[in-house]
Every structure is written in C-alpha cells, then in structure tokens.
Length: 74
Image 1: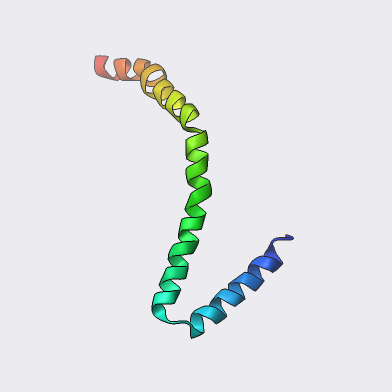
Image 2: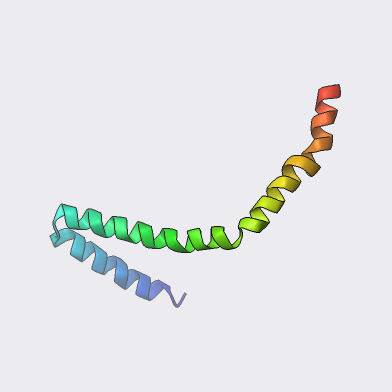
C-alpha cells in the first residue's frame, strides 16, 4: 500500500510529460523504461541459469522419461 501513492504521482507526472512532449521523446522514454524493466530480469536469469538448466534437464530426462515410455507402449 505504501508504494501506491508514489506510483500514482509518477503516473500523473508521466501523463503530464507525455501530453506536452514530442512523439520521438515519448517513444525514447518508453524504450528507456522498458530497458530498465528488463535489466533486473536479465540479472535474475543469469543468477538462476544453473537452476534453470538443472530443472530443465530433470524435467526432460528424468520426470518425463517414464511418461514418454508409457505413452509409446500404448
């Protein structure tokens, strides 16, 4: 709940800036905001890459091996 008020202020500020800014500036700001949202996700992917590989291997080779063999026999 504490983050709602600052978020609303940022939203209103963004609407105000977007209403008077040029279209290329608005697109540049939107691109920059999307890039800033991607940065933490990319960092998380890098930090969790070992876990992702291990879980993918487990899913593909251990968990589904029996189900796949059962499906082929029937």
